[in-house]
Length: 284
Image (cartoon, rainbow, N blue to C red; front, side, top):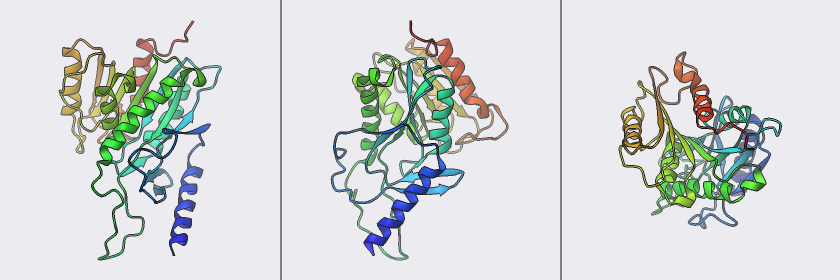
């Protein structure tokens, strides 16, 4: 029975991969088992729908590498952290779709599959399952994965054809929380620029010394995380004299998507911001 369940989950994970453009490489964040996940003996699983695929039960955090064409590459990298409430990862419109759009800008993209809270793949009515993550702070592990992703890309910048001082990050919702943890975290795991998009945990907390420039976007009708945190984050950066840009779109709700307003084009605004800050200019 256990073997059958594992087989089904493996097929499901394969189905997810078929729905999305394949990465050039899948790069583990850690050389062995991710610290703290030694007893997570279960399989990653696919969820969602064909047009909005998701990944759940991430045990082995990885970067999915989507390089820009060499003819247009500008030497800049961005790590893409999808959202999903730390239980799932929205792999298309907050992941691979964003990576492919960044590639069009000449940016090498890395979709981050950070560790998530365990979801019982086969719950039974009235039954209980033993939680393999009991007593663990999985959110802290997700944050650690974000910081490790920055370290890895920076350490291997030459291999990826990017500059070590042009390692950025974009994060959505829960992924925005992972991003902010990296921004406020140790300098070696901090991105050089960052784009928190309707980020969970955005607040007026003062930026650390050496904090990066920010591109912030949210919708005024976001009922999930609201817009005030993003406004407070912007204010904290401006008060500290650190460059920041803020877009509060009239419509877009949580997740943006195609809703007919300015939020539909937030990646165009990001491209403009990257260009203004010299991040789309090829190094001499």
